[in-house]
Image (cartoon, rainbow over all chains, first blue to last red; front, side):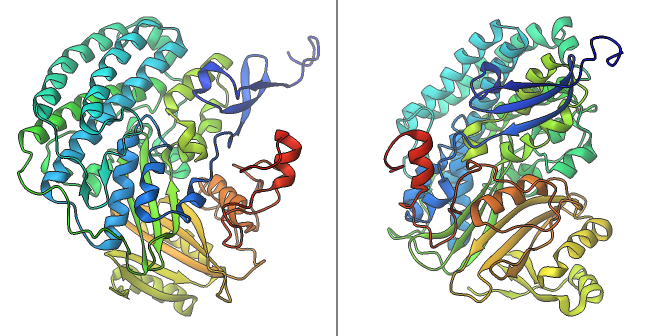
Length: 369
Length: 168
């Protein structure tokens, strides 16, 4: 058809870096045949701040606030991963009370991150209402963070070796209150979206990534689970006491955008479940492990990774025995997951690209670092 | 704390297959890693994937040690879903040496190697698309090399493209 009528050839369309549905400053170059995407190319780096270089010029403690600025919608997870990595080098472990509080905050942050994803993803597809609901519930979580450590987004909630702050009075009660509210609200979101015919038609069969593809591309997190792989670092290699909590790993079958939506919705319910258990069992005791004022890990290296809301977040830390890191490598889930965008977009329609970027759940601060 | 030898069925099998191509099997802080000769890296990755179930390449990164005769460590973090095991492989390369690309074995290596090239200037032989990924294409330095201080940016690029005197 294409050769006979108007002799139309490939069309190159530039999307971003300033584009509302790229969630930041992502530039995607689309090669199109009419409405079909032939291939894509991502241009990234607009938010590059040289975080890994900064690390080499700060002390171990001074670098901790910087990691919050990578995935700024899930700063607690970033901080947790970094603290665990340095603790691994030091050979210390946070005391049980600190571990429980860490789990509570990390899971609340997972819900907050997924809520922001749900609101903006739905907005991209054309469903405006969920955004306001999601922001409303997210506000409750941010209020808990603010009361706990004074910051709402870039929290710097943890310290190497434990926590800086004791929980405030009423912390447990507010967390439980949030869970009670949230369980009902998430039913409301699902009522709006899950069975909605327009929602399903826009998402089903779009951006399929099979389990094999995921492993080839190193895709982790909800995207891997939506492809049917029951793998979650919180279960596979538990850290911070996750082995004590009872929760399920939700999975999908088709690995399409709709399954990824379902998986993330289930994950939020599971996170609330973990928060409930952790709040009920916060042990008494100290909140800081045996860590000196000057942190000088012995010469050595370690790779520690956690299940961040977007997937496997890894820190490869190298110490030369001084007060400053010799090298900090951050393995961001968004960066690696974004690489699979091309695979998912090929053969899709232009409008689907927006849905696929949304479902990848990237944060450009983390992609570019 | 010092690294201790690492011995398991896996190391036995790798030893039998690669012999003196693998220089060291060690454990540090409970984490296993091996050090291999640069030319053996890709065959080892392949064997780990095909024969031992290490089907997920987590990360590729580099560390710069300017005083050493082989100044760069390239570190591969590898995970196996069936075994739930994570290991690291390290190779040491000289300045200007071009290690083989891991893209034919794991597609995820594409962007990871581009980032190593972008930050350290290490070129991977056989990489399908080796360009800078995070920094602008005309950028002149490789920032994560130790000789580049944090205050030293590419002034030329900054002046030309941002219209300001310095990036500081």
